[in-house]
Image (cartoon, rainbow over all chains, first blue to last red; front, top):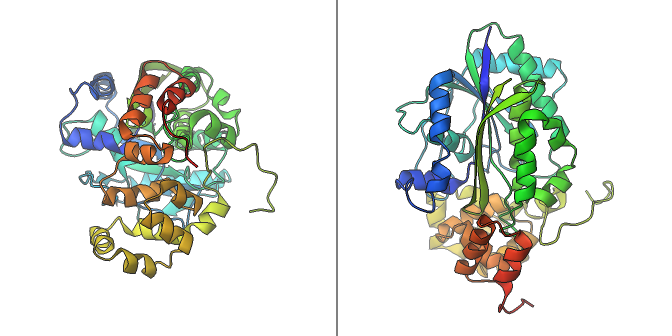
Length: 280
Length: 137
């Protein structure tokens, strides 16, 4: 049976891609953030996942506002990055895992999650940067990919409670999968930040700490607030915590063990965080 | 949209990109989405008026773009993820965009972020940033 080796969570600020491109990992501004990744890299080298199920949000690369799915699951043989409009170098492509994608899709719909399926899906920095950070020297990514995009852009967004349930339904799908893959689930984005409006630059360390402290032991605590309240607490883009909540759900309902945490302010306008959890 | 259940208490300095904004901002966001293509970015730089006309920007949107007013673009329905692609054409990053929206020089905006990194609350860091600044309007 397939095994979930654990979950990895990280911020996905586009500027991280620029910093990697320019080799700024030891620069004083960037070092406290990049220093959070050797433990992630060592953990991945130890648990050796061969499939990644990634919860993320698209930033206007694959989805425009003409059609905005609340939940979208990729079912492609390959996923490519493309020009996002702000000068980042192109990121490497991913190999898909078609049978697992369709198994998850069938299982989710059976469980009454009315998702969108994507046989063509461009993946943006929100998906690529976590891999650049986790596998800095890879010529090609060591895992196949099943991407799950959550709308964190155009309100109404799905509730945190619904996103946790989606993740748990993905876990149920994995439980009924007959393959012997080693699966890592990944949640990207956050933590608190706000790019737009007069409150641009808003960060909330107390709320971030609340999220990080509860992610392993009581993820349901993160679902008590409405999306509106999460925006108030975490910023307009801090609501990307939904991606973390979905990934945490995919680990299953049991308590998880926190293996690693790093938190640093600021990276760009963001409170940047990185965590690794394992099933307890 | 406006007939939906009562909206919760607004969040100061925050403009949720909801159905009203998405409907209002469609043309502007559509133009910004086109900037994923380098040729379109160049076409905008070559003939800004002509390019904006092609996407049927509203007068409010056209003025906000001409004025490089980020808050004006947001008021006209612009979504920040799309506006960031327009900002990229001018070489502006999200600290520059933050500076434009808060009305302080970018160095002060960055200092506000760094102050939060030293453990200051947003409120304290923001108050410090605004010290000595002219209040808009």
